[in-house]
Amino acid sequence: MVALSGRAAFVLVLVTGIVVPGVMNFVLSVVLGQQMLGRLVWALGYTLMIAVIWYGWIRPLDLTGPERDPEEAERKVKD
Image (tube, rainbow, N blue to C red; front, side):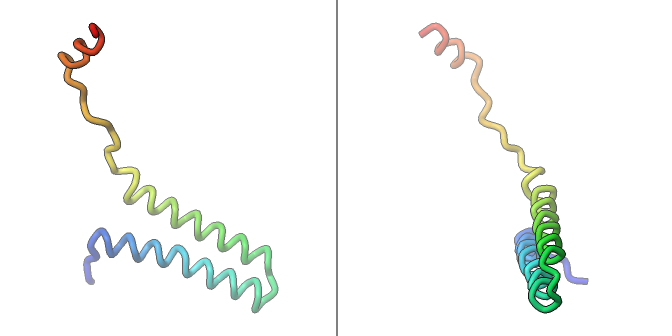
């Protein structure tokens, strides 16, 4: 089995999460005439893709600002 890099896995999830629900929406809505089911499949597929991207790539990021120097903070308070 081939191991994917982080960027390749991200692109694969992104493309799959857009293309597969879109094609399923088309098939269900246009070909089979099930518009509501097509919309539901598209919304669930797109939501699942967003959840996977959040869980796999966004959630692990450490989004904190720089630590403040205590001496610098005291100087700013005094000024």
